[in-house]
Image 1: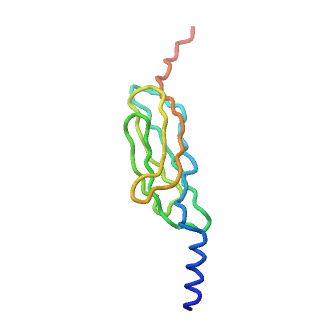
Image 2: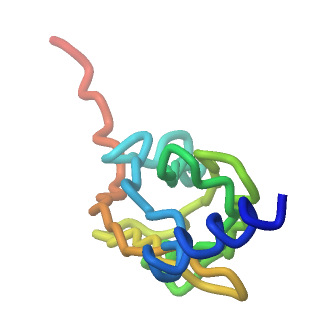
Image 3: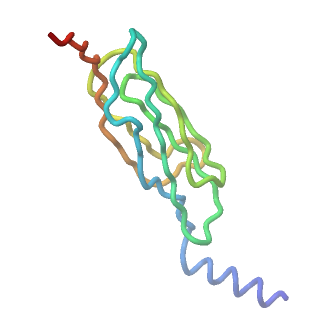
Length: 125
């Protein structure tokens, strides 16, 4: 039994420190949002984390919404976390997810977002 524990420790030592789970993508739904009915749009931001086959470690990520606001996410052992954010002004934003916190995820991903006013429909003649 002791020999197996020593052999396992030696194998882990050969690979060095285990890498943190990596942020693979940031998905925005919708990618282009429009104000309608005088209310700001709700933009769903999905942050996906993909892990190695045998990686069960958790990690933390920070999502910056590009408008001065952000949120830190604890992924635990989940592969994907989804956050919702409401934009109050039209404009072009860059949503960025990066490792943060006590157990940061590896990597950084970003996605552009355009928030605009919906065009009023003109009556047909």
